[in-house]
Image 1: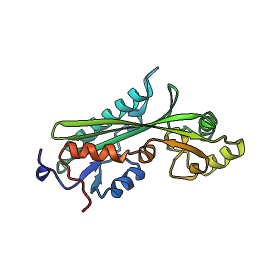
Image 2: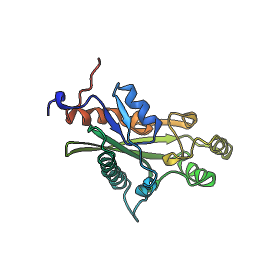
Image 3: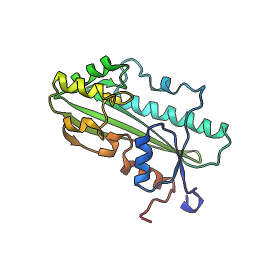
Image 4: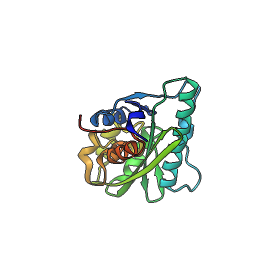
Length: 208
């Protein structure tokens, strides 16, 4: 497909401001394609019993893309590539999602303290009936966190709404001893894979 036939923008079907900022970093024009009030977006993220973290994050991302494409058609919006993503934190085969409350965030952070874990971010881009889906896996190791460290971080409110109860780009960075993989992937959108997927669908990305 020629890039001349591809719109000059994409839709980002995500409420994450970090993903929008990462697309801005690459100079990718995008518009948000957020769920309607009647859509139960949180229900899409419910894991199945004994589901492996990678299978989970890929399945959720595919469901998000299906819902976003239907949303695009329902709203009669101009056609353009649609990008979806989902991030999960895995401790072994255990999926550590968004904390339900402060006590849950404390539990998750205690489990991660001093222990390596995986951060998996899956992306899926759909355009003209084609889909390119990729999953990025990175590893993060927290230093040992005291109860006071955890309590202070939870009190900041930052863990809420974030997989694994932390954001790598925020205050949690003071406790992260080692990262292996994609920093942008840990943030929620692996930029190398995202750029490759968009190029694969004919979307021009360059240093203009």
